[in-house]
Every structure is written in C-alpha cells, then in structure tokens.
Image 1 (cartoon, rainbow, N blue to C red):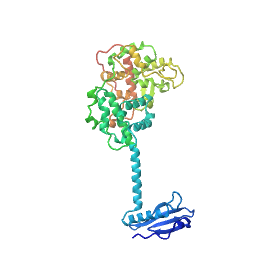
Image 2 (cartoon, rainbow, N blue to C red):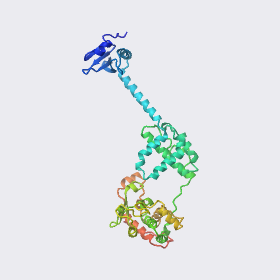
Image 3 (cartoon, one colour):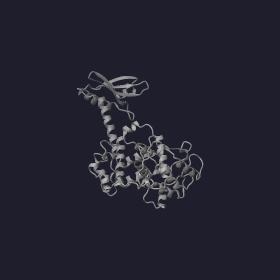
Length: 421
C-alpha cells in the first residue's frame, strides 16, 4: 500500500518558511528564500535518485493545490513501482506532442502554398520578372486545378499524372516545363520538411515509365539557321539596314553571342584597347563571367555604335533603345530579320551557323568553338580539369570568323582553315 500523505496541510503549504518539507509518496514542498513554492516528486529507480518538478505550489490561480499534488505523486509512485521512469516518460510524451504538432502544421501546407514559398525564396535569383511570371502562370493554369488545395505532403504520382496526361501530347513543351516545376516544388517541400519520400514528379526511372518521351510526341524544333556559306552575302544585305537593331544583330553574329547578352551590353563591359568584351556572370546563362575577344570588324562596328550614344557614362547601353536609359526589346533583332523577309534565319540560329562553320570549314578543335559559344562542359571530369577559357585561341578563331563574314561570295566547297595555336 502506498504511504499515506502526512505532514502537510493547505495552511502549511501557504505559510511554510524557506526549506524542504516531506508529505508522502515522494511528494515534497520546496520553498525558496524568495517565498516561491514548488512541488517536487522525488524517487529512486535502478539505484538512481531523481527529482521531478510538478509545478508551482499554492492555492492562487495557476498554482497546484495540495490535493492535486498528492494525487499526481500517487500516480507517479505507482509508475516507479512498475519500473517506469516518470522523467523519461515525460520527455517521450513531449517529443510525441511536438511531432504531432509539426505533422499537423505540415499537413496544413498545400501544394500551392509550398509553390508560393519556393518562388518567394528563389525569385531574387531569377533573371527577370518574366521568368517569375511564367512560373506563376504555368502552375496556376495547369497544376493548381489538380494539386493546389492538396497537402503537399500527400502529392502522389497519380496526382502528377492527372496534371500531365491531358497536355502531354498536345502541348509537349509546356507539359515538360510543368512537370519540371512540379518536381522542383516537391523537392523544395522535402528540403524544408514539408514532405518525405521520393519525388513523384521525377522523370528518369519513374514518369518515364508512364509517359512517352517528349521526342516521341513532339520532335525538338531547332532555331532556323542560315547555312554557314551564305553568311557573307547575308552580312552585305544586313549592312544596308538602318537602325540600332541592325548594328546589334551584326555584332551578335560577329561575336557569336546570345541576343540577351548583346542587348544588355553596356560600355563599361567594353575594353576597346584590349579588344575585349567582358560579359558579367549575372547576364550569362551559366552564371559565369564570359570574355569575348573582339575582332577588328567588331571594334569598327562598336565605333559606329558609339556615334549613336544617347547618354554618357560607363553604364550606358551599347545598343540603346528608343527610350533614354533603356535597352532595346528582345524582339529588336528579330524585327530586323522580318524587315529583310528572312524567314530562313533567326537571331539564335546564327550561333548554329557559327558552330557549323567551325566544324565544316575549319580545323579549330571543338572545345575552342564550344568555349566561344559559352557552352557549359557537360562532362564533369573534363570540366574539373579545364581551368582556363582558351581565350588566346578563341581570339584567333573569332578573327577568322569575322574575316569570313566579310567575304560576300558563297563557298561551294569546304575549305579548311588550319590553325595550330
């Protein structure tokens, strides 16, 4: 039989001086010098004596009265006699309660809310507002109707397929982007503790078993590219076109640069004396600074562009738009091609023309051509050993390319341009 409580009364609990007072069944009253009173349960288990706090003692609101403290001590005393450690059990109960609260909170986060958190966390690193708008638009149009209100922790393969199946063959490119964005949101949710397990939107080894490959339902469409042996004649026609857009397109062709890199070029990036254009990492697709050697023809073109400067200062655009302080639109160079009625060419396609010329009309190694195009080395081992950017060899290559672009006659046959440096 448990020992009957004795020695304490409600009056003594409220009036006892500083010290420790025994009641029974391990219950003790602790009174500090400040007058603050606490209940303590003292017990011994496996040869180890421990004390467990039971709350503030007294009869005021929020305090534990003597009767309740005795009842709790009696229950804990029985636990100890059965071999259970009350303190260890309290730790386990609190951990379980915390886990349950976390799980409840997690299950309250929907896929749409997780997507919004991801976009908020990553928006600053995206190139422009258009990219952010595309994310929001595609998810809102295709993913949210099926997944938006679903707890992100509960998204399964069947839910992802419900989004993708209706558009997989009819809108292959869009469907591919939607799948990738769903996968990214779910990866983010797992990283932030909102879900667990494999990603049901992953392609390789998963959805690839349920959906046909994109190439089978919608062959990749390449940018229209002018044959390399027609570049010279095209450049003659292009030189007759007025406006900054035509200058920018000529510069893009001579440097084999992307349109976004050309349209965003500022005079602070140009070193005429060194015949060098340095594109900062923030404007490069691979987020890595790219040095572009400028051939004499490209420098002459920049001299023409300098005469069109609307504003001074190093931060001025090399190819300014109609609005002071603004660059040209993304469609500026495309509109030049339309005016020329050249439906057989695209701005990006001239990069392909350059690459074909490198392969078919010269003996420059492929890695130099790829470096000129600022392509990322896919082979991780090769990338680890390639420390430089082959700049000296690329200067020779770009000068040869500019010279070729200045020859209006078409070349009916392949002629190798041999370079050993």
